Each structure stands twice: as structure tokens, then as C-alpha cells.
Image (cartoon, rainbow, N blue to C red):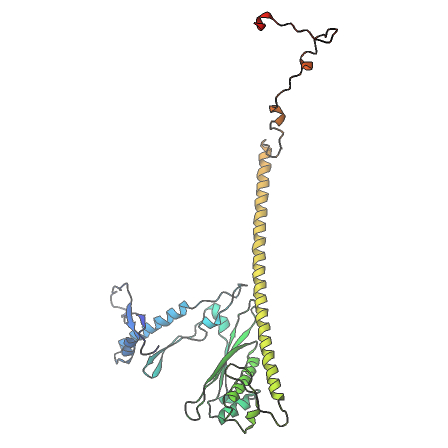
Length: 357
């Protein structure tokens, strides 16, 4: 936090003694600016320092609680977000003018779901070693009067299958005094700490050589592989014997690493898609089982109703036929079959005179 910024944070009052009576607390928290905290911290009175320390502790607690908690490792669809996690500890820095004073450091007490982030590694070239590219990187840093590089590694689990991966961070600090050099900072993922450290040493050496072409001219480092600030290969001067063989090898190495990164992303994406499909299949199977239970229950109800005499599957046995509602056709043959016909075939019918009238 810069001095010019007016950032308001929540604060609490100084701690009370154990025997002191309870005092009513106000509903609204006290709002304190960064300048007020700075004044309290520089105050000789201990209570001001305690009040600001508790205030900053609340800020750190709020920051930690607002970070997104990763899903449990048992969740097949879960994905750890290491970029939004508090991995090691929380350091709250408050700027006082040109100095930056560390105010708070939370002790490393990790919950169960944070265990995959606890394993860390650190490698400092100042202590010496015999790894590949280590000696050359140390010598070129010493030649350019740069501080010894440092490398950090954090084990993470960001795959559905729970495979190990390491987040490697290389910190090659620059120099603010002549000869001035810029800081080189980059990070990448690797499948082991040893492989990632070798990659970081080679990449750091290439970026240092690419950043200091003029300063390394005439030395053996002038023919080392060069990378720009984004890690892309740069053109080399032709070697008397090897010509451009080193440049070709560096280009092939860079392209191979890019292909491996793309394959790793595709593999991770396919595994995540497979986990989603498995979850969908499991959900559909559960739905099918529920529907089968419903069908069996309804069949049992139908059987009970049939046993009680209610026929709901008998078709149209007990329903009226459409032919029952058709009009009867009038035929003389059916009505006067019992009468004897005359010789001419005419059937005489007696009609009452009363009916005629």
C-alpha cells in the first residue's frame, strides 16, 4: 500500500484486561486510514502499536477468507487455483515513505484441504552445487556483478487425477548500481522439482545472455543460447566451428517445450472432460434407477387395484359399442313375414277406419 493512497480498513480497540467489565461494542467498526495506522505504529505508546497490529491482522484475515478455497481432492471435477491461494504465509506490507516495513506474518497453520501446497523447495546458487548449467549461470552472474539467482518450487495438485506438478519460479535479481542490470523473473510448471530446476537454470542462463549481449561480447558466453524477456530464442553470432548449430538446437528445444506444454494442456483438458462425462453418466444412471423404482411402484399399485376388482386394463369390455347408438333400418320383410301373401304377391293389410280418420 502506498503512502499517498487513502485506504480504509476495519479496526478494533485495544485489548481489555481479564478482570475489566464488559464494555458495549459499537455496531459499526472503526474506520482507520493507512496514514493513521502509520502514525500509531510509530507512536511510542504500546497500545497504539497493539491496536494497529490487531487492525492489520483483521485485514490479513479478511484477505485470506476472501480467497477462493479449492475443492476437495475427492471431487473429480475440482481444480486447485494456486494463483489465488495463500500458499506459504501472508505478509502484509505497509509503505512508509521510501521504506517498506513487514508488519504481519501469519504462522503456517494449514487446514487439511491445504496440505498439497505445503511442500516447497528453494535453491540458492550462492550455496554452490553441481547441477547442469549451474556453474555457467553462477559465473556469468558474477561476471555481470549480479546477485546469485534463487529458485523456488511449490508442489501443486491441479489435475483431476491428482498428479503432482511443480510451480517453478526463477528470481534473478538485477543490480541498481553500475553496471545496472534488470531483474529477470519467470515461472512455469514442471512434473518434478529436479527437472524444473534444470529447466529454470538453462532458461535463466539464456535470458541473462540475451539481456547482456554487449557486455558478454568477446567471452565464451557470447555463443551461448539467448532468449528475450518473453523466453523466445534470439539470433546468435556464427561460431567458428559449430556455426549456427547451437542456435538450431536452442530453437528445437524451445519448440519441443512448447509442444509438450500444449500436449499437457490438451491432456489435462481431456481428463477434465472425461471426468465431466463420468459425472454425467453417473447422474443419468441414478436417474434411471429412480425411474425404474417408480415404474415398479406403479405396477404394484396396478396389481393391487386389479385384485380389488377394478379393471383398468380390460380394454373396452365394459364399454358400450358404437353400434348400440345406430338407428334401426325399417324393412317390410322383417315386419310382415308372418302374413300370407296373395296370388299377386301383395300382402293385404287391414287398416282401422278410426285410424284413417
